[in-house]
Image 1 (tube, rainbow over the protein chains, first blue to last red):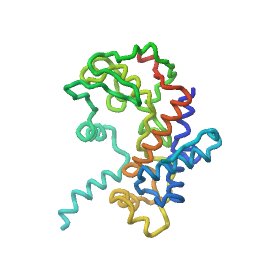
Image 2: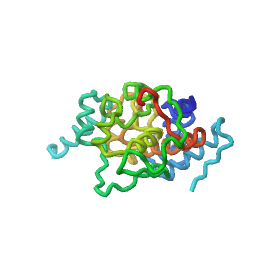
Image 3: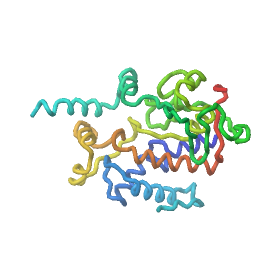
Image 4: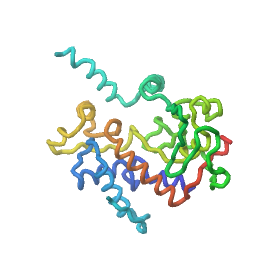
Length: 66
Length: 199
């Protein structure tokens, strides 16, 4: 079921492409957000763009960051 | 001085203990975060991601049969806080009450059924606990940027990091919701997912 597959991409597991762990990781390396620190919309958008662009499944998707 | 700190310390201790019993969690939810009702006396239209619903009657402007309806084989709302390292999709009702949606509850809350179907189709991601450890930053300056609750939690924890994002992960979860619903829309269109057992 497609919905389940989409949900599994967001599992709280470093192996899942859009997990909270991966958001925090990119936030720390590129957005100056240490783990535990609040994200703003800009850091979040940056993470979405990065994680989509580096995920193997969605190479055809373009995330546009305002 | 100590008296001033005590109430906030006990609140932080409660916040730091992420494993609420179900009872105390419901108690907090009832007062702090009650189930939203549609209290608008004018009964203005309700919008959900570009789709408009009339609040006055139980059917929206569009005939709901004209919208694609997909079978959702499993009610995923079973995976809630008790599940470790997983994402759960909650229906508006199962998050707070063990009964499934029924027309009596809906009438009390004032939400039209077709709006609820649409709204509950959306993927909702929220705070989770007991997930794979996110190590704390080694940087000394990192602690200064944490909220008081997050700082308190990291000092209590033996593993040097976070296994829960309560209190600091809300924007990350919001971003996940935006992306998840965008993917849902791209893959499955703008239709409604229904669980057969609820119809």
